[in-house]
Image (cartoon, rainbow, N blue to C red):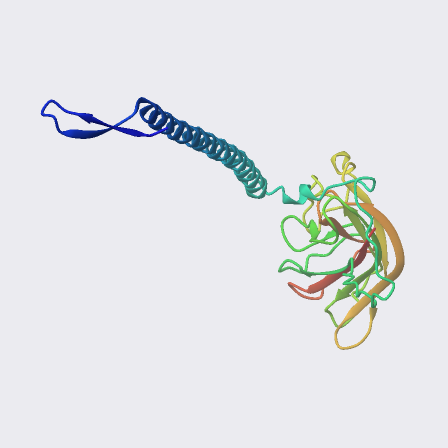
Length: 274
């Protein structure tokens, strides 16, 4: 069938025009093109929706990551607060059951151990008052108005120690007439009696609570060079400290007259922590 026909216009000229069938076919072709374009647009809409869904998914993951970052930040702040409070040591406080086992490799070389001694050697100089006032038997020998002696840091505060040895040195050239032996009375805190030099030693009731015991130091002997000395070993008296210090009275068993003013004595205690 022909797509065109010849017709005469109003002036009698021949004009070529499309047939109805051709026009219908053109319209159908245009409609088909429109449908193709519409399908393409629908496909593009689907792709846009898929991209939007992907963007939403990424946004959700970013939100989740933000939450994790916030949680980490809060944990860091909490650790900082613990550090600031000085409680870091508590982070490692665990029972044996809560602690993982540590396996030492079979080819591990020997690991040196820095073992620090728990022994203490406390030497306490004593300068007598500037007088030669005679001591009676059982008098306190000291250096100030209060004759309480302090052996500082002789053990761990609040811990227990063994007194293993005691020494007494007197920097004088001869044994005074009447001097025999000495005894050292020990206390966990300063005895409330606060006896002065040359005072008679008494067993005050208020001194009982801190009392730890006594050590008989023996009688000094002249070892030459203007020095008297006595030494007692193997004492091994266990004592519970209240602080890190031990307090004491030095008491003479025999009455004697000092040879000079401000004589120098020295007491030394040796201990180990237990």
